[in-house]
Length: 246
Length: 175
Image 1 (tube, each protein chain N blue to C red):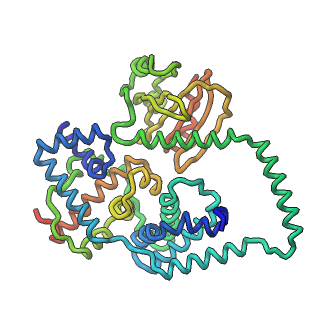
Image 2 (image 1 turned 90 degrees about the vertical axis):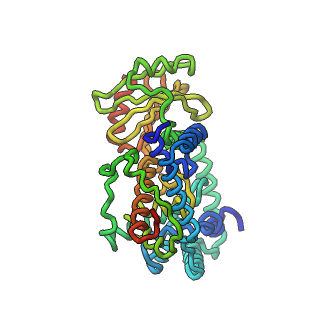
Image 3 (image 1 turned 120 degrees about the vertical axis):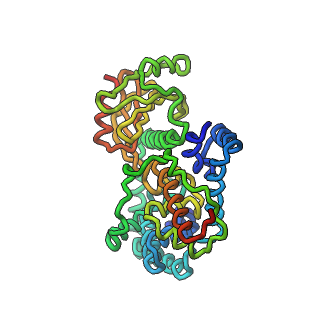
């Protein structure tokens, strides 16, 4: 690793955000390079000065009290009065009935799908850490597709959409919903798009969700399920989704 | 009290992080009075949204609400502080100039450090507060600040560089 490669990683190194391999590589370079080591020490001194100066503000006791009072009064406003207990018994019975019907109409599959979307977003965020995005880095679909051979038991369609403004960046293996999946990486301007692909065992209705600021699109095509995650807006990501599997 | 009692749940989910919430509000608002208003409003919003909290990182969840409340407040009361630091225009952190100083900070006075942080643009200040004072991970900060991790990393590098430049102008850093 040279100075040029080390510089952008120094902050992540000092913040303990690098994986072990990278961390060791940075350390190795710092041993031999006094210039980079000096930058590291200056950042360290800034860090310890900020920690030692005790700059964090603490919530005043009066604020704590006020919040508890407010929450208390909000809670009692919305809480039912118990003057007519029979009414509440009937309502409770009705609620139980409603809950039972809801459970029958909305099988737990829905929450599982939410969970999967959550995992997909987490994987997407993790992939953005330095060195995590791709295992095979290539804009050539003929390099990326064979790379998956023997690593997974299905063959994802790999196509470069550079002409449409979504260049292929590469691919990697990832783990979602208890199985190994193919992850294809595309770019749109400064945005990264992760496409998680696995064989569709059951048909899933197409959906677009906004999760913590990320757009998640799920769709089936050609017997494969595509879960597309990006911080790109839903419109453009939808355009991209339409390109897949055609 | 059962765990489903909203007030009891509030005590478990929100109150333990009130210091962190107030700290973020205080650094964004710039004074005690407004920080208390923001922290109080954010806490009440958290109470109303409590049913939607699905477990997981309650600190990040609360800080996200605090940040949104604070930005709404800033937009209404201090629009000039929100002149955004268009990230696109920032040079990448690969730029060696951004990797910055090699000078060592010796005895930095607490007030000088505080003034240095207050002089930073609000998007830079918040990432430093969340990283250095609250010790949050890049991922948590990215969630709270609603920005990609790459952007958070570039803001952190820029923030630290500006902080060093400020301190060096004030003579707190020795070359």
